[in-house]
Amino acid sequence: MDTPIITIPSKLSKGEELVVVRRRDFDIFQNWRQEVKDALAKIGRGRKEYRAQKTISVLSPRVFR
Image 1 (tube, helix red, strand yellow):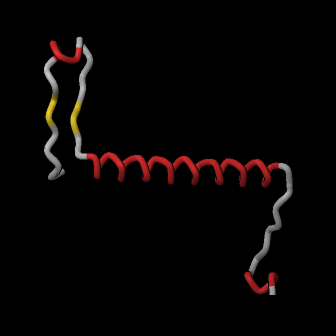
Image 2: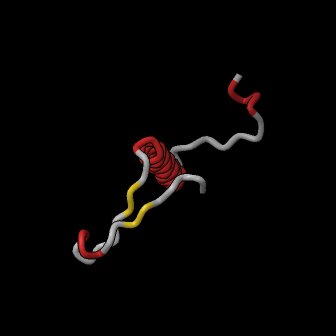
């Protein structure tokens, strides 16, 4: 990882570990986290619909033509 990380001393953070990162890196992380959350929600909905037999199983994409 080429992004420098600085740890803030415990006296300033009152015992908690705090880390400073670049805003751009934090934004990228937040976007990635939102995409993962969205993907997991879609997978959960799909599994729920599959269990409720609301999905169609096909052997070939030609079935939709």
